[in-house]
Length: 125
Image (cartoon, rainbow, N blue to C red):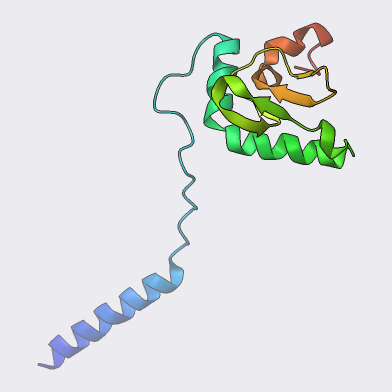
């Protein structure tokens, strides 16, 4: 009977010592990769990326325009084609953005396309 109690005590002590020596598990990062393959064409990839991250890109672009002290009346415009009353980031366009005749500024998916900046050199792209 004494051996059984000693064995259980030793076993419990070993478990406790093992827990003290245990290293914390590394943080598991979420898988942000799309389930479907990434388009090979940089322009198609830019549009795909922009559509998946449109909310964050919209918030970033609008915040950046405010940080640059662009007047509120010039930030963004309506996207009638896609039924959005107002936005600063247009994920389905591909020119880099623009300024409307009324002076409203918008940015589109081509800003996440590295091919757009190739003519400016490797530092820009």
